[in-house]
Image 1 (tube, one colour):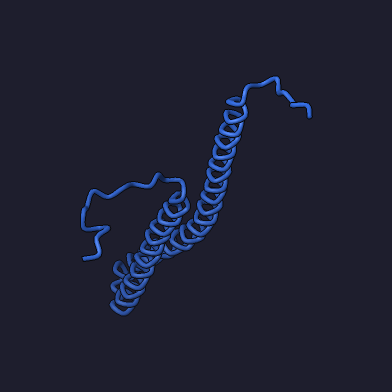
Image 2 (cartoon, one colour):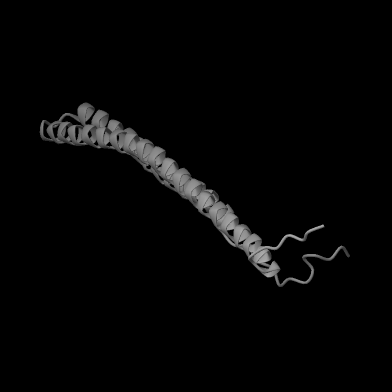
Length: 138
């Protein structure tokens, strides 16, 4: 029986297996980062589209408010108490709607930030807690 010889020493085989594992781990990490970046881009894109809609609604409300302020000024100038009161009531309603739109915009921004943070969670290194009671079953 003839013994086969490799031109590489036995330690080389171990080194190549180890290198393949390191390359596989690196490729996996790159893939995870790429997925997280793609997900982040999608989240931010959808969030921006929703934010633009809310900005448009707010802008329309503010334009209507400007027109009502003009009406209010005309009613005050004309000494029309009914027109003045009606314009004031409508301005108060619009102010509430503007505040609601701004609250929605803030909530949306917070939600987008939270979703982005969650998309990056798998990429963060695991930290070991120094709390000794964390692992105890007492």
